[in-house]
Image (tube, rainbow, N blue to C red; front, side):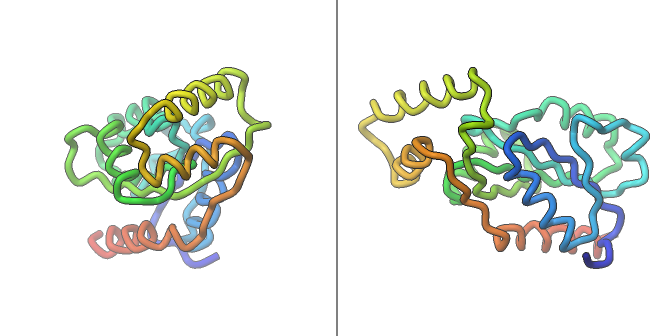
Length: 181
């Protein structure tokens, strides 16, 4: 573990472990502390200057975003960086959809997307049902992009698409924030 780049906390929500894997990698690179989103209390984050929020996306929407936004409102003095994981390939198009669906027209949001994975055995019954519905809806479309075809394949089987090298732009953003004080 490296020396901490300032006081950084990674708040993470991870059901299947892929998002937590990225949180662990970021922590190893920066010395940041990790806390599960479910365990966060206002008192426990007061000493941190930078909060990195990571969670999976479902249908291009952040899981648990409401709780993170509540924390962000209560702590306007903190810098927030967001990362999401999912089964879509890491492309500008994917990042753009996540931006629109979760941040609308907000400018200057530090947002990163990392390919995660799928562990069908860890999904709830309703999540499996939604995945099946989404798969059927995608198959009916005539205008599938290459990314869409990749996702259709990934929906069929469990798989791990994580890549440690994806965190480097986020690490660079953290370093810039530390340098800016």
